[in-house]
Image 1 (cartoon, helix red, strand yellow):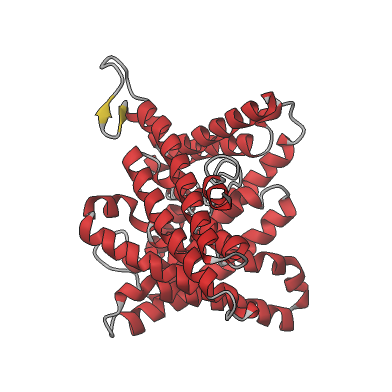
Image 2 (cartoon, one colour):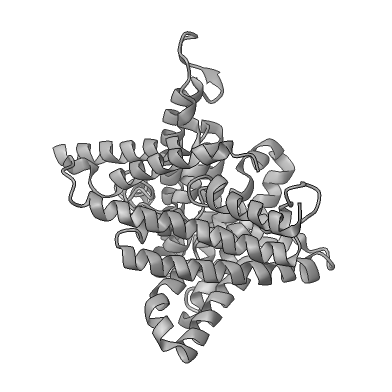
Length: 196
Length: 202
């Protein structure tokens, strides 16, 4: 039961983006289309799950003073794996995510979960936490990307969803649109929370 | 165009046209996290300029004399992030020992910089960047200058944002808009203003 709790807390209650406001750089940069958001989210989920597992396994032999460099090496190794696998099997996605794949290393969500959760809990719980937080991150990316792609290109996952007479607002998929969309989505979530 | 012209183009591109925060989305966490007060924004900005310049220099040397000759380019991410983490730690210790006054104003920001993606971002971008003729790859000096100007660009928008947010505190906003949402919308409007610079032909 605790397992399911750790697994689902990242979806809404402790959502990494909307509630904890972590990892904003990839959030805003890659959400120009749903497919990019999904790709980045799943890549981060994989890294988060693996790094949580390893960090939790070595928590008793990690010297506390140099724990951060150790965590960074663990995370960077998995990011390199993701980078190389993506370049080999999904070259188009790899190209459109570009710089932000190596930058998963400095995504605060991953180091944050290693430090705050995996270094204190057992392996099973850490895996659940990693998957949950990763999927919560993916979900938020898909929500933001949905708004931006529909407004900015009139499509969802590449399929046309708006009538042909709709003139896409290009601004939504440009840089300013990213900030404004996230700002309004956060305000909306705050409003729903207050109503409760 | 001489080398001075090249430097000018690089500065304009890094500060205005391809601003690290507003156009490239790098370093957003400190941009939104440390922009509540003007003093701390300036302190953070100075620390970032310093670390970015130094990190550009060292990662350039590591890339050219270690990773490329031994053909281990795939270790780039790990090598760079470790270099940056140890560099930040080292700088912190040196400043603490030799310049306590500087440490007092910059010290608290230094540990945060390791996870600032702008620093790793500029290091990775420098390895693939070209000069304005788009054939010559960056040399050692170019990389250092690019690191410095990118840091300046980050500081400019961070300080501007802090000024705006301090005024925004007094504004009468709906409760759900307060704090992060309005900060993001201001950032969006700033990004829109910076889009105006993109039309420049240099």
